[in-house]
Every structure is written in C-alpha cells, then in structure tokens.
Amino acid sequence: MIFLETSFLISLFVDADSNHQKARIRYPSGEKGLVTSEDNLKEALTVISQRRGRTASIDAYQQVIRDCDLLPVSSERFRAGLNLFLNPKLQKDISLIDCITAAICKELKIKKILTFDYHFKSFGLHLFP
Image (tube, rainbow, N blue to C red; front, side):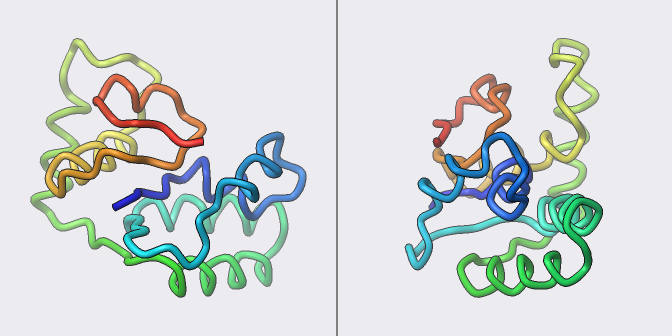
C-alpha cells in the first residue's frame, strides 16, 4: 500500500504549487493499493478549494475517490495519533493530522507515503517522491 498525504494531494491538484510537476510525474494513477484518510482528504480539498475554486476541489475529490481507498478516521485512530502528538519528544512542526496519518500507517503496516513533508521519515516511513 502507498499512502497519499495532504501535501502531495495539494501539489497534485494545484498547478501553481512548487511541487506540482513532481507530483504529476510521481502520481501512480491506476495503481492498486493507493490509500488516503478522511482527514488528509479534508485538508487537501479545503486548500484546493481556496486556491483553485470549488469546481477544482470537486474534480480532485472525484479523482482521489476513483484511484484510492478512503480510510476512515475512527476514534481509535484519532487517539493513537493524539498520543503521538502529545509526546513531548515530537518535533514541534508536526501537526495532529500528520500524527494520525503516521498512526494509521503503523496500524496498517504501510511503509510508503507520497508526501512533500519530510518529517514523516521520523515515523519510519519511506518517502516518495
């Protein structure tokens, strides 16, 4: 499985994003085993809507749903991510959503993540691109 994280999704769908071309080249459209979470999708669609408009956000949603399995963020997953977030040793620039993403990857034994946020390395994930 490969997890599509918020920063990658934003770069993929926002033409003006500095990583847009990298995301387009690396996007494994049609590949089996692509996943993202409800939280990552919420974050990405909000930013896409702000930067490109509602229609672009809806188009992005339709492509993500077509290509990926959407993972629910259950209360158990939220608590696992919150426990990571509350760890005093955690880098200060890692968001709660990123911690929930890391917890989901750990739970499902996902090792690969499409992201432009390099702090995911600290969770033992293999970063793409």
